[in-house]
Amino acid sequence: MYKAFFKRIIDFFAAFIGLILLSPIFIMVTMGLYFANAGKPFFFQRRPGRKEEIFSIIKFKTMNDKKDLSGNLLPDADRLTAIGSFVRKTSLDEIPQLINVLKGDMSLIGPRPLLVQYLPLYNDHQKRRHEIRPGITGWAQINGRNAISWEEKFNFDVWYVDNLSFALDIKILFLTIKKVFVREGISADGHVTITPFIGTEKNNN
Image 1 (cartoon, rainbow, N blue to C red):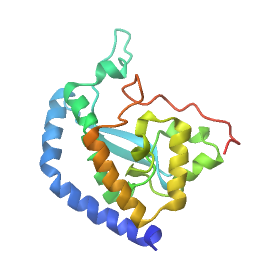
Image 2 (image 1 turned 90 degrees about the vertical axis):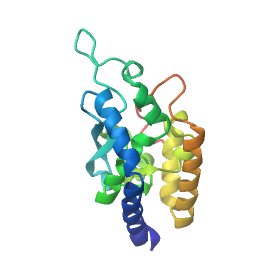
Image 3 (image 1 turned 30 degrees about the vertical axis):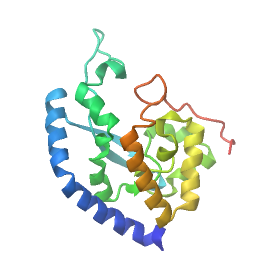
Image 4 (image 1 turned 120 degrees about the vertical axis):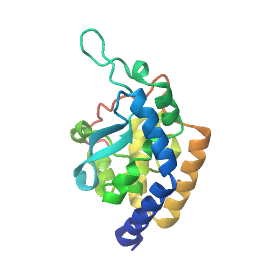
């Protein structure tokens, strides 16, 4: 009953209240990133959701669009602005995703929505992460976030799908708040963001 009905209701009202309470921070970060990113405070990207349906995720834009002499974007580390670094470390870049939760694209808790180009790379076990709505935070995020391997992350995601409950969501919510304050697992070792997923053997479960 919780998975099929109450989870969505709780998501909607929690996201609505969250946007109201966080509106002062939302406005201040938007203004800061507007000036840091030449008038582009938000980042939009197509991601797969429940049943692999594609939607546009909304995040604060933490990197500018500076390019080299050949017209190619500079490395992530060179494009990460000062305010963008702060926003990322404090996980404030996730706040706009509350809009995705209101729309029904996402849930507060669930597997993180990844890149569309990863879809053909998943094996059957990994694809199960799309049986439910993706989340702003999830079981993988409180168990290492970007500091763990892709295989570990997918195993955590599927475990959550199989064990989803109200009690588990509350536990993940509170542990996420703790992780934000201690700033654990923001990026993989030696990288501003996690290294790209290149796939695993199709029959590897």
